[in-house]
Length: 216
Image (cartoon, rainbow, N blue to C red; front, side):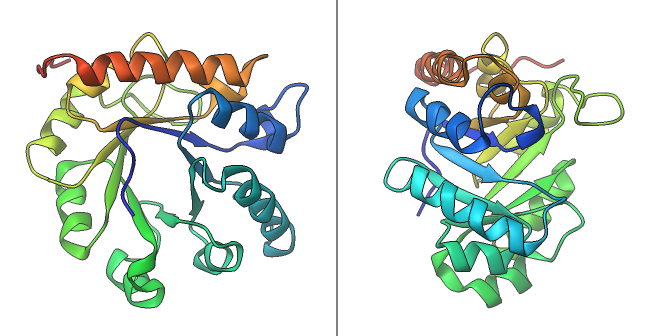
């Protein structure tokens, strides 16, 4: 399996959902164009996480990839398509030995050196950020220059994360990203489906444009 192109990833945070349940918000986002859902509810124990993962698997089946954050056991139980490893999580190499070749494995990185290491260990993609200011990341944003430096050194897909909206997603695509991962741009919206559609359309337009590099 490979990440779709362009890749629009929705990272879950059930606390941001307004009048909808997380499942309903995800369903509407997938209908709007999200093609990867990353289940990241770090405060939930396995007993609560597994039923949620099963629910999201049913929603995404044959419509979007389902990636589980950190928990290989949960990913395997619910039949997810992959697992996403945080920067200081288990190594990609060890996870690959445990998971086999059937799961996509991604890694969060914050430098070109970390991206190269993840690629060398067998990661299928790297999630790079935070690119723009965002409430979910402390410290200053890395800017488009980080994407450019990573793109110059790895050949696996790059997914940008951090403060990405329909207005700036074209910039990350032009800087070398294969796609983007978002949280609040979709979940903290009264209409997750419409927000996802705007992002997806902007990404398709950017993917069709001639490649260029814009450093910030």
